[in-house]
Length: 244
Image (cartoon, rainbow, N blue to C red; front, top):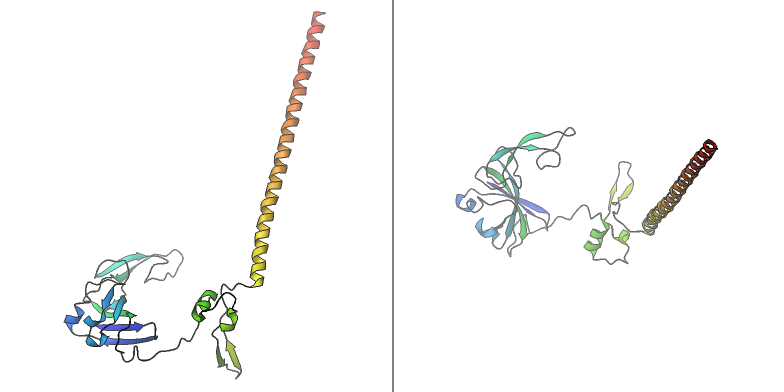
């Protein structure tokens, strides 16, 4: 079985092939996201702790979290599911995936270093690869450089310079997301003012509508009273004329 070990702190990966079945027995029946002691895989990993992040079987089918079996199953997948990308809107498809439990059919197992031991491993912890791209969100930039709210985040953006096809030196930097500027605060105040003005306008229109409805009802009642009084007066006059 091939073990693909990744170290997030250094940005390096290393593939180790283990043929000893005694060492592999410590990985069998383990689930994804479980942690494994590095000493069970070899003396060079003494003190290391690994987390199982996934793997593939001999035919290339990936392990999927939440499928509690060590065999291959066929699942009806739709948009948003792991191990599936829809080609048409509303499409569902039955796909073969491997369960989240490590079995003997696994060809490549992916491990992530969660705790680094005392000894350095060549090609994994002895060197580091610098990140080509820096953080993009304003809060992550502040976290990386330990900045306060008063510091200007735009001065700390990680940019890179390169020469384009025309031979011009170009500086390329990401657009900072969720950056709070005076313009964004002004727009926020404007949105809040529009909302309050809309609420006040709705209240005024509702009050005016109620006033008009009450006026119309009063007019209808007055018209009905006058109609009834007219009918009574005509009936009275008719009775008087008949009696005379």
